[in-house]
Image (cartoon, rainbow, N blue to C red; front, side, top):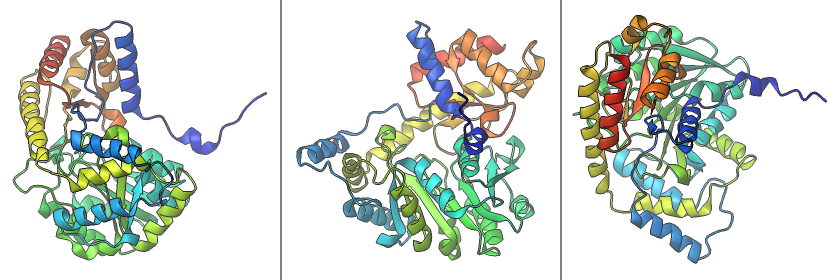
Length: 394
């Protein structure tokens, strides 16, 4: 018997970041001393007050179905967060709680997109954006901003990429994988282009909002272009800031008609996110936020070391990050000079096998010749990993 899979599933690939992490774990299980710098999750534990809230929820019997779009308490906490931290006003029917930010984006694409529609995605991009667009039968339009542009696209590039089929534009700032953030002026320029196209929806992925160390601090496009509110969906979550990656809670704020469609998609897939994780996430948003500054300071300290060390490596070109816990250095000069190495995938494989350090090839993010390095790990491991990488490439 021959089983034929759908053309849809054949268009997409598994997440390369998860694949590298799985391979690193397999090598560790075989006794190899592999240092994983591939996974995009904080190495901190979830704060105790959040874990206590989850335990209390279990003990109180909050273990049944909730509303598809989230508990009223969590939705109100999200509304308050948007208002107090981002100066954005949303009503209850403009909020949807999902199983992580990934499902939020999936819901959005399934709600908006038809075959033939185009989605503008700046590269380098988070690995799942193009494949989720393909799952919705639409076409990713990749607009590249390399290291010479600080990994950001210009307003002119955006204007040039827009066609009559453009339905959605993706903005992720600060960015996974580069750690670079758009300035207010840059967001304003992009917003002025988008304001001329009111039928195009904008998705602002703000998941790294609390891990930023620029003088301007965090901004999203609605902060500088409030006139875009009727065409913008803001996606965020608790995974990165609160070290809650495994709890799987993301959320969206946007126009009621879009949120209603996303809710309908979710009702026929996962239904509500886990009830216990929702109560914990409400506690996260409503509790003391003071630790966030300490977390950000720790990531910046690690960043400063990683940036300085990479800068001193022969053949490596790197920019300082504005936030997140990623660095995205170019290893193209290293690739060009090494015998038997022709691309970033082969270099990442060599570093994994010889240096026992797991990195993700830049081609997975839409830009060849780079490697993504996550510094969401302790300083001792970072020092050992970077020393191994230096020895391997030099």
